[in-house]
Each structure stands twice: as C-alpha cells, then as structure tokens.
Amino acid sequence: MIKQFDEQVQQINELFLSGKVKESYQLAKIVLADRAFIEHESLATIQQHVALLEANGYANMPVPSAEKEKQSVERADGSYPERDVLTAYLGSQDDEQFAKVVDELLAGSIEAQANAYYTMAEYFVLAKEHDKAMAQFAEAVKLQPNKALYWGAFAQFLNHSEGSPYLALRLIEEAIQLDSMNPRWYYIQGNIFLQLVAATKNLSYLPALEEAWEKAKKRCSAKQIALKVDIAKSNDLLLQWKKQML
Image (cartoon, rainbow, N blue to C red; front, side, top):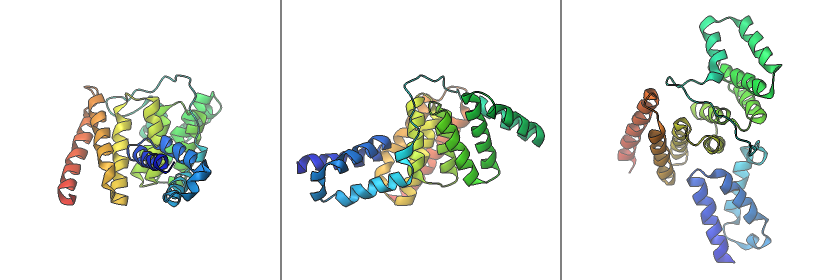
C-alpha cells in the first residue's frame, strides 16, 4: 500500500509539472479520500497541494461539454473576430455606440452574451481595472465553456498582470484541450511556466516550458510571423537566463 501511495504522490507531482493540472488535482483528491493515506509521510504536502489549487478555484471550474464547438482562428495579426467590437470602439472612441453594441450582445443568444462579457473583459484589461476584467472573463467562460478563446484569453490576462500562475495554468490547459492546434495557447502555457520558475525557483518546470514553446513553434502558420518572432525572442531570453542560473 505504501509503495502504491508513493507512486501516486510522484504522479501527482509529475502531472502538475507537465501542465496536466486538472488530472493532478483529481488524483490528489482521490488519494486524500483514502483513509489509509492518513499515515503517509506526504499527507500534509498533498493536503497543501489541494488547498492551494482549491484556493485558485479548481473545485468550481466550469466544465466543457462533449459537444464540439467551432473554435476561433487567430488572424495573422494575432486578433480574433470576437474582439472586433472592442477594436471598432478603440478606433472611434464612440462610448455610446460601444455601449449599444454590448447591450445588444447581452440581449442576444448565449454565444452573443459570452462575447459581450469577453469584450468587456478586454476593455477592462486596457483600462487596467483588473478585478473587473477577472469577473468578466469568468462570466464568458461560465457561459461558453466550450470556447477555447475565453479560457486562453483569461489565462493570458493573468499571466500579463502577474496574477496567479496556478489559476492561469488550469485555464490554459482547458484552452489547449479544446483547441490543440492553436499555437497561441502553447506559447501562453510556456509563459506561465516561466512565471512559475521565476516565482518558485523550481527548475523542474523547465522541460514543460521548453516543450510548450516547441509545440507553439511547430503549429504556427506561415502567416503568423509576429507570433513566431515572439516565440524566438522568448527562447533567446530563456537561453540567456539559463546561462546565468545554471
């Protein structure tokens, strides 16, 4: 029994370090539910692991359905059609028209409502109102959990605003599972791992970081030049950092 628990504890750790954070959390919950685990030396560590993840909302995440959602395709400039309402506003600065379009979306289908919350989230990101942005992203994900863009944009926002990397890792994992061919999600995942390495000084995240950026590079289309440049720059920075650290 002890050997089995040892293996499960190792698996919980390995799953998390590789970005399979949902599985890591689920396995940790199963292990803690086993009364025999109370005697194990890793009890406190696994309890802390679960407590940390639950403090980041792992227990109450929206669950995508098995339904196949048509995923948004990133344009060459890095934009998405769902952001066009905000882009039009930024070009015109017409507050009344922007509010009107958002209200129309909120009165529409579930898909339109989710787009409205996503639009407001991105608006609050630009306005540097982070708490409001968090709330709007959460609403978009809740309304349309099958849409990778909303999970991915939420994760990117957290990464850029130095929010919780543990939450960001969980969000980006869902985006990848929903849309595994989008290079952007792997690039963001690598950035989150980099944030974790910097915050925890745990170099065990490095293999997953490098793998994420490699997957991003391989999935880039010929038109995604800006993203390719970003990936190359990030890899160069990582190489310099590793020379100083290792």
